Length: 168
Image 1 (tube, one colour):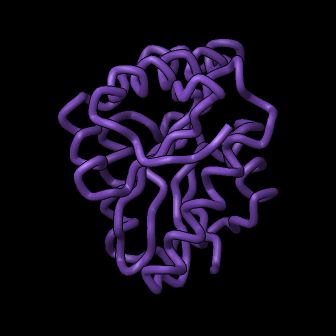
Image 2 (cartoon, one colour; image 1 turned 120 degrees about the vertical axis):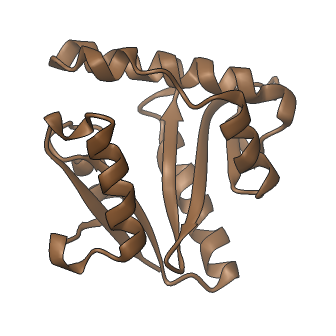
């Protein structure tokens, strides 16, 4: 497997990966997350154009995971990282996060940030193992506050969520 920039013709595959990855939320009583639609092709294309979208491709060069990021308050913010269940538990997500960290360092960004569910094993506990630390609410940057407000408006605060930061 290798990491490379996402290609425009692969955007529907990213949606499929996110849908498949989301199904595990059904098993923990979060069917609304499993049923949530992935980002639109237009939104995914924006990440491609900003050069902040990568895939892990298999030996046939087909995407099995992806990560998209935004620039938020001087840091790179993980907007979405999804791994197809057939490729899960093989270090693929960590590989993408480490790739983003390398990219962020090359841009001079001091940290990676993300928002996540705190009580989902493959969310906050996983990110903590990848070097992220929970952020205290009073230390959130303006951009992270806006992201959390959008998430709350989307209904994601039905379950405990938090921001996390990985210093580079």
